[in-house]
Amino acid sequence: MKNKENTLDPLNRIAKKHFGIDYLFPYQRLVVSNILEAAGAEGFTPKTVINPVTGENEIYDTRPDQIVVLPTGAGKSLCFMLPALFLNGVTIIVFPLLSLIADQARRLIESGITPGILRGGQSSAERDILWENIKTGRIKFILTNPETVLKEKVIKQLNLITVSHIVIDETHTVSEWGDTFRPIYLELGKLTCCSFEQKRAPVVTAFTATASENILNRVKEIVFPGKYPSLIAANPDRPNIHYRVINTISKSRQLIELLKGKGDPVCEYPILIFTRSRSGSELTARMLREQLGRENIFFYHAGLERGEKDKIQEWFYNTRDGILTATIAFGMGIDKKNIRTVIHTEPSLTVEAYLQESGRAGRDKKQSSAIMLVSDKEIPGNSLEERDSPSVAEIRYRNFIYAFTDSSHCRRKSLLKLMGAEYNNCFGCDVCDNDIQEKISGEEEIIRLIRKYNRKLTLRETALILGESRYSDVFEKRLFSIKGYGDLQGWPMEDIKDAIRQLEAEGIIKISTWGLYKNRLQIIKKRAALQN
Image (cartoon, rainbow, N blue to C red; front, side, top):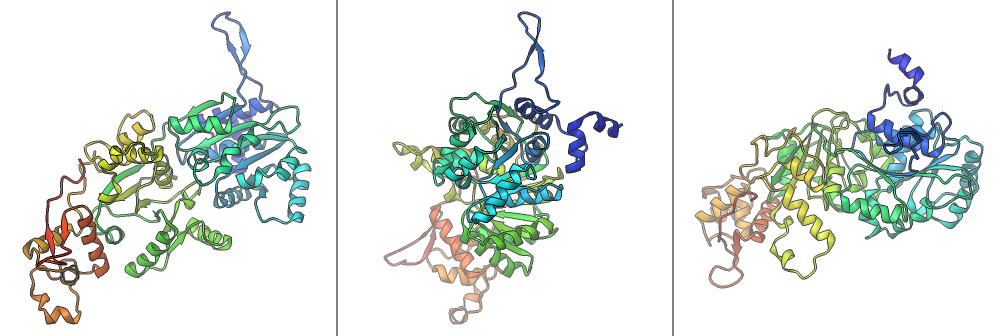
C-alpha cells in the first residue's frame, strides 16, 4: 500500500528515492507544497477554494514568501531540499556558519545530489566551474553564507541564471546577529527582494527552529521588507527532551560528577557540552580528559582551521560514546541524531538560543536530557531593574533566566510561555518529576568547616583541609587533624578555592581584608531557597 501511495504521490516518491523517507509529515507537506505552488512548478497548480461570500471556486493565490518555524528534529532541511528537485531553476540556501554548509553538503552528497558551494577564499577558476555547472543544470543547490552571496560580483552572476527559491536557514540569527556583530545580515533584503531579471521572482522561505514574536517581526523587516510572508509555525516543544537546572558553585566539579555518573541524573552518551567562549570549550575538554581519563573528548569552535572542523565533525557524527565541548558554532543545524545529553555550562543568552542548542539532543526522537548549570552570579539582580534603560538583550536574558530557573514552575511550561506557544503537558522536567536539586555540590562541606572554625582559616588552609592535600604546611600546622579533612577529597585545590570565591560573591562567605581577622573566612548569611 505504501509503495502504491508513493507511485501516486510525487512528493513521497522523490523523498523516498533521494532521502530514504517513506512519507512527509503534515507540516513538511504544507511547506513544500506552498513552495512548489508559489514557484509554479510543473504539476503543482494553485489550490482552489470556495469563496465564502460568492460560493464560487476561486484560485487560492499562494504567497511566494513564508517563514517556517519547526522544532529541531522536525525535518526542516527536507522542506527546502525536496522542492529543489522539482524546480527548473537553482535553489540558494544561505547559512550562518560554514560548518552548516559542510554538514548540508554531506547530506546532499549522501543522497546522490551534488551541491555547489559558494564561499570566501575560492579562486576564479573554482567560481567559473561552479557557474558553468549551474547554467548547464548539473547543480541545483547553491550553499552559501551572507558575506559571500551579497557581494556585487555574485549578485551579477545570479542575474544570469534562473533562481527559483531562496532559503534563509536559521533565520533567528538575522535578528540576533545582524543587530550586533554581523551587520551584513541587515542587507539580506538585497538578495530576497532582487528580481534577478527573470519573469518570475524567486520564492523566499526563512527557516528556524525557534523564534518569539519579537524575533519574527525583526525577520520580516530585514528579510521581507514591504512584503507579507505567510507564517507556518509548529509548537517548539520537544516531548522527548527532559529539562533540568542544577545550581552550582563549581562548574568543573559539577560536570565531573555528572559525567562520572555520581548520583542523579546519569548522563547518557554521546554528550554535547556548550560553553560561551572558545577558550572555555578548549579548557573544558582538556580538564575532562584529565579528570575522566578518556581520550574521546574533543572541542569545537569557530577559531579552528577548516580541516580541523571537518575532522571533528566527522568524528562526532560517528561516535557513540564521545564528548564534544563546543561554542554555539556547533549549535545550529548539525544533524547528529543520537546525541543523548546536552549540557550548558553557562546559560544561553536567549530562550530561542537555548531551545536551538538543547534541541541538538534526541533528534532520533528517543528520550534525551538537557541540563543547565547555573551559578548565582549568572542570575541578574535588582541592579538591572534599577538602571535607567537596560538593553533589549539584557531584558530578554533576564526574562529567560528568571523563568527557566524558577523551580516553582514547570521548566517546559516556562520555555513555551516565553515563546508564546501552547502548553499542554510536561513530558519531563526536574520540577514536575519532584526531583529538584536538594543541595549544591560542595557547599555544605565548605560552610560546615568555616562555621566550625569561624575567622580562623585562610582560603588556602580551607582548600588544603577539604581536599585532603599532602603539602608540607598541612603537617606543620596539623591541618590533617581538623574535622572535615578530606570532605572534598578528589577536588583540586583550585576548584575548592573557586567555589569559596563563588560563595563570597554571593555574600554567604566573607574574607576579611584588614584587622585582626585579615584573610580569614567567616560565614555572614545563610543561602535562601535554591531558586524562588
